[in-house]
Amino acid sequence: MPGVTNPFEQFHAQWLANYAVREADAGGRRFAEPEHPYRTCFQRDRDRIVHCSAYRRLDFKTQVFTPHVQDHYRTRLTHTVEVAQVGRSLARALRLNEDAVEAVALAHDLGHPPFGHAGEAVLNDLMADHGHFEHNRQSLRVVDYLEHPYPAFRGLNLTYVVRECLAKHQTRYDTPLVEAADIDTTQHAPLEGQLVDLADEIAYTAADLEDALNVGWLTVESLAGLALWQQAWATAEREFPDARPIHKQIRAVKAVLATLADDAVQTTLTHIQTMGLDSPHAVRSAPRRAATFSPAVKDATNDMAKFLLKNVYTHGANKEKEHTARRIITGLFERFTQNPATLPPRYQQRIETQGLHRVVCDYIAGMTDRFARETFEKFA
Image 1: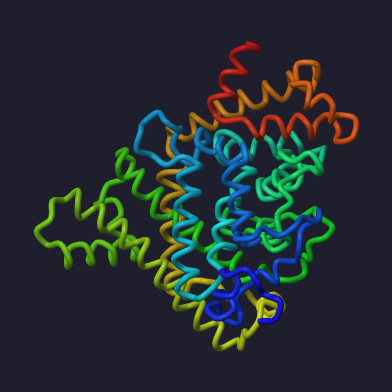
Image 2 (image 1 turned 180 degrees about the vertical axis):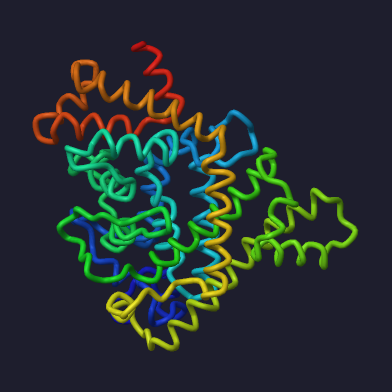
């Protein structure tokens, strides 16, 4: 490929499928920077995300279970790592750009507030008259503005493609709301972004199932009516007939993940072929998204999602945590909006240009569960 000098880009020129995003398709950065001698633009995006403070704070943000109350349950950070791992595996199978997928996956939840989806709902209510709050939009705001490690500009200055995929992140629980004027909302995300959406659903379906089984909110027997679990349990029984029940349970959960991943690869590849997608442009302008589950697996996944919603996400213990989240976040919001002088100085400086309520929202959204509790107790 003419103009390619980075050895890794030379490898990509031969390895990547025609429909994959190449480094030459990255769309540039909002602030011009010299290229790195041995890291591609997407590798640099990934590194900037991993080294930013918002990424580190994911370790003490709720996924489903309160982080670090018990050592084995997922946090928002471990979920993010699992999404990246699943995403890279799917990307490799489809000959997509693994580095772009990894960067998007590692950044896709940076905008999540403390206390999981309950925290997001509370912040959205509090911001109803001030532009609302939505974590996809906040993830883009984090990488574009709130992170500020460089003296010459605000944000991480990520490539257009990674920012586009973050803005268009879409699952059953995520609706993309884009404010960035430079992102075209009339087109689909590249396949790399669409694949992260699938990897996200695959990762949290298997992980939430496993954590809920381990904590005792679910039992193997309670899952017996679900087609996705029936198939997974049959696989575990067939491959490990003499295993202990706990090992069959573990292998069944892994079989759920494998079933979803295998179906995502095969269905997406079929769509690529039948839709004649031979370039990133063709992917963006296609009549529908190419990266999906098959109808049968989608139906089975929907049934599992409804079951988890009823028995895990709205479990009595989680409902109690929702009340706690609302009390803490509402209390903090009222405190900071009524007395802005209690905000850190760097946030006070932004009030004139960003508006008091948006600045307070940014500050609270960036908190970990632990810091939100500590700050609330300090003001109590």
